[in-house]
Image (cartoon, rainbow, N blue to C red; front, side, top):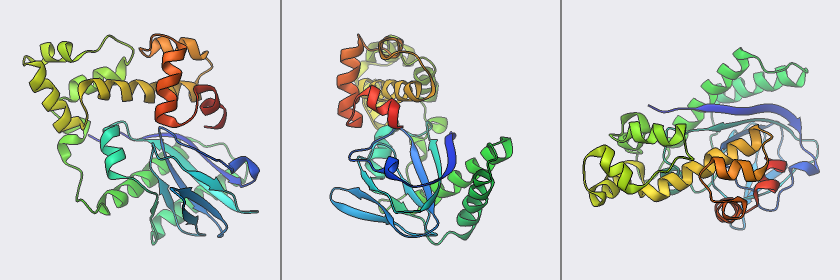
Amino acid sequence: MMQITVERLGCVVLGSNWRFADLSSHFWRLYLHDVDGAEAIIARRSWPLRGGHPLLIPPWLHWASRPGHGVRQVFVHFASPGLSDTVLRRSFQQPIDLYPAPFLVEGLSHLGERLTAGQQPGAGDLLRAKALVCLALAQACEGLTSGAIPLTQLYGLSPLRTLAAAVDADPGADWSTTGFARQLGCSTDHTTRLFSRHLGATPARFVAERRLVAAARALVAGRDDIETIAVAHGFANRFSFTRSFIRRFGTGPAAYRKRA
């Protein structure tokens, strides 16, 4: 019903390499700092990363960061592909301070101690991280002022779950509203209404967002050149891909790969 994938976790002491002027990503970021000092800045508002306060930064936000001198950071980057990107942007428009959350603090601190000791993450660490981010995301959903996200907007319970899964499995395929309508056995107008109601976006926008997310993941995880990634994910060429990528992430594919 709700997919969660841990993309990266670690423990670092913050330095100038954590100073970003404009950062956006396709994944969530869960942070725990040991002391005060660092901050995130969104729309000129400061969000201090307080010591012992887990902070959850949703995907798609554009934010800047200022590191604190000598601050130790435990971080988990994770994706939630079972939830529409449009729904995510509408529901989560600012960082979420999860304090108090003793179980979350204890679990992240334990991960940080293991990784600080030079130990590479193992299966147990990844499972622990996944449990912690599920808890963090559940707490974030409970705090929504507009109420819970409708269950039908989770891929697993959506009547469009098969189509959504097919797009995620092959984002570069020739997807179209007409093709979706044919598979659903209804008109294109009704297909558009179904997508908007259950996935939070029109068919064209849903496909475009899933292509960008898959391409962003390929940039970070692989070594293919940008032209190859662009064409494989349904873009006409590198230039078309770069324009769409900048509109969504605020930076080009090459810069995103370097700093993500």
